[in-house]
Length: 375
Ligand SMILES: *Cc1c(COP(=O)(O)O)cnc(C)c1O
Image (cartoon, rainbow, N blue to C red; front, side, top):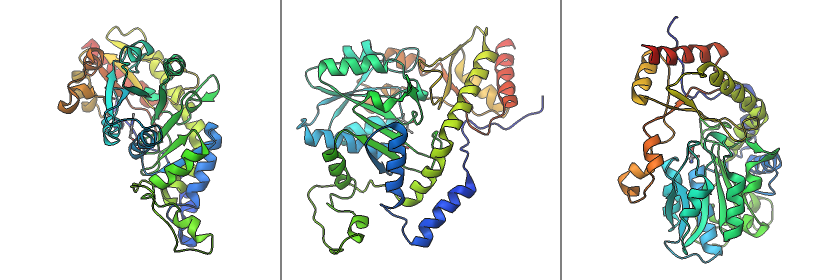
C-alpha cells in the first residue's frame, strides 16, 4: 500500500461562501461586536432551540463567564465546588478556578464521560454545579445527570465543545442542561478561527452576561451606533474582553449550514471504523449512547500498547491523538483521585476524523492498526 499522509483533524470550509460573508463586513466597515454576531446568536440559537445565546471569543472564556455570572447572581462563596472531569481539555478546569470556584473531579467510565454514580459520590455541602463534557458528542448519562442535578439542587452546565449538532431523542444536548458553552475553535465540528457561544437561562442573565463580556460596559458600540447618545455609557461591573467579532461570526454562519451534513458524514466514518476494527482483541471501540444523533467529533479506541500504536501509525503517515491526558496527572490538579481517568489516559487513542477523509483512508488506517497487532 502506498504511504499516505492523513491528519487527525483537517477543518473543511466553504471558502467562497466564507469570503462572501466576510466581504460584507469589510465593505460595511463593521468587523467587531454586533451585526454578524447578532445573526449567529439568532441562527445558532434557533438551531439548538435556545432563546438566549451570546457569541464569545472562545469556549474557555465562555466557561469563565458562565461561572462568574452564576457566582455573582447566586451568591456562591469563594472556593465553592463544581464537579468536573479529569478527562477534558485543561482550560475548562482552569476557567472554574479563574471564577474563584474549585473544580472537583468525578471519575470517568469506559465512555470517557463522567457517569452519574461518580458525580453523585463527589457531592458535598459546598457543591454548586456540575460541568459535564459529552466527550466526542457522546450524551452518555446526560439524562440521569440532569435528574440528579434537579433532585440535589445543582446547576447543570454543559461543556458543549464537542457537541455542536449533537442530539438526544431529537433535541440538542443543550436542552438537558441549564447552561451550555460551545466551541467554534479551528478544529471543532463548526470551525471558525477561534470563537464560541454560550446559552443563558433568562433574559436578565442574557443582558448581564453581555456587560460582563464587554468590560462591564452597559451598552455595546453597536447598540450605541443605533441611537442618539453615541458616546454615553456606564460601567457597572469589572468585566472582561470576551466578546466575539463579526469576522468569526461570518465564518460560523456559513459553517452552520454545513454542520448537519458534516456530522452525518462523521457518523458514517465512525461506523466504517467500527466495522473494520471488529473482532480485533486488542482494540475496544468507544460507542456513543446517541450514536445515530452524535456529532461524532471524535472516534476513540481503548487499546493495548497505545504509545507503540501511535508511533507505528505516525510512521505510516497517520496522525492520531489523545483526548485527554488525565488532568489529575498535572501537578496543579494532582490532589484529585481519578484512577479510571489515570489508567485510560495510557490506553486511549483518537483516530483521524474529518470531512476530507475518504472511505479509502479509513480502510488504510484500519489495515495498519491490524498490521500493528499482528506483527
Ligand atoms: C476545545 C475544547 C475547549 C476549549 O475551547 P476553546 O474554544 O478553544 O476555548 C474546552 N473543552 C473541551 C472539551 C474542548 O474540546
